[in-house]
Image (cartoon, rainbow over all chains, first blue to last red; front, side, top):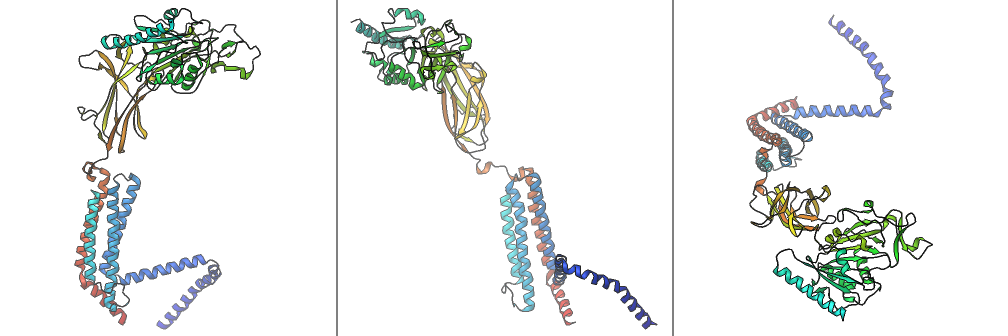
Length: 159
Length: 439
């Protein structure tokens, strides 16, 4: 019974798949004639692959870094929209607020690169790493120091 | 012999006029030299009533064109306050010292006033005409008279007044005289213009062609005033009939004479500090001037006759950043315990948002009136380091300040979380990965 059922299911599945096949064969000449849709499919596939790879490589710390980056971008965009709507009168204040977002973003991206590579190179014993001598602790220390300098300058610039 | 005696008399009169000015503080007698041709004017004393020259007000001197012994300027000062040139039969008479163009220019530059009178048949000597050409008046040559094919005799009415600023009415029913062309100099004030259908040409020529006429229609002027930049005045009239009391008073600096009593500027917060040399951008500034007008030998407060005569202030650095009308605010005395003789004009304004060397410039050049000009240079500085508004005083910047603060807070939270998450979690993930690989 079970085998029969399985076989019946397979058959019905094959039957059910046929119109799909037909549809696929029917579409084939169309596909070859439009390379744009093909390349779009490629791009979608590449994005999917990248995304799954990204999810695989994601550690909680990297996830934290990324959410911080997204937050900084959102805040920067918000200020830019505000300056477009209201005008750039206290221009130094706008520059200060905007640059604090951009600068913090750049510093955090550096931290992410160094940190990700440093942890990877722990696995791969420093092969192919552009920062072979930088340990994760050093990367974090640099990040904290640079950020303090940045915020110091920003608050003085805002006056 | 007669000429030399007249010359001596004139020189004496000149001296007397000066000594009178020194000793008598009352209305000063001014000296007038009338240069004439005895062939045309046999009794020069008749001119006195014609010019309405009151003997009590003027020291009069008469000089014939044949006399060359009088100087117009001595030690760079005019010997006579005013000189009147009557027509001459000779084109270049002997009296070179009073008729040469260079001498006349020197005299005008020294502050003397000149009145030249033309006529139908004769003009002032050629060298005086050259002087008139220099200031932009081109009288018709000898023998050219103003004529018209439509009227036997040319009558002048109020329509012929080019401007009523200097002479307000015309009392000349019939005009016999010459006309002049004038340049477009801003220092010239046309007084009487020729009729629309008139022309000036040699009266002996009947067949009229284009190059035989000197002026056509309203192109010609019968009386023209001129005021040099040093406020010395000159006038040319085409006929003795046009010489009126008003015109003589204008030429002899008895009316329409202005005096700048003072100019001052100050910051409105600190009115006690006058004429400071340093201002700051966007300072509130007050500027005022005092102007007197001469009326009946006395200084009285000046009131502009019309809207066009308003005083203006330019606040300029190469270009005027402000050009403002001054308003009459009142009258006051120019000296302590003196009579009220000065009109005060003032304006308040805000210094532009631009630092540099600025000039308070009063440049008053109106038709018929003495020119007034005054320049005061001040420095305008920008805001000092501690004079700017702080960011938190500006509501707009609160958004940016908040944003920068949020970034700092978020960063602190981020670092804390980053440390809190710790290595363990990373190792756990790596272990999971290794397990996946093993599988």
